[in-house]
Image (cartoon, rainbow, N blue to C red):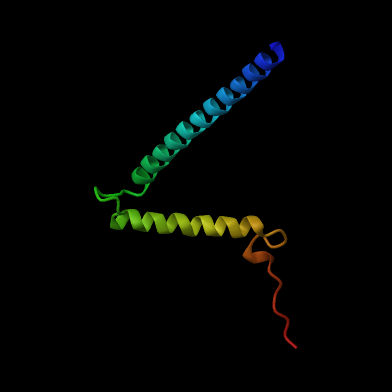
Length: 91
């Protein structure tokens, strides 16, 4: 009987820990999502309807272009700048 009670307590403890972990994780996800939405609306000037204003849209496009350029430069291992490109040889 003691073995059954011990196993039941251990299983209930494991279930409680899993429940608390999942609950905390979902709350953290909700908070992070809310913070990202707030930061996005502040950074790119969203209107009341949640759409970017003209200035916000320009800033978003500039940010995306900068991010794309940074990613391409980060992936580049041999050529780091335009000056390092080999010159075309004439025949």
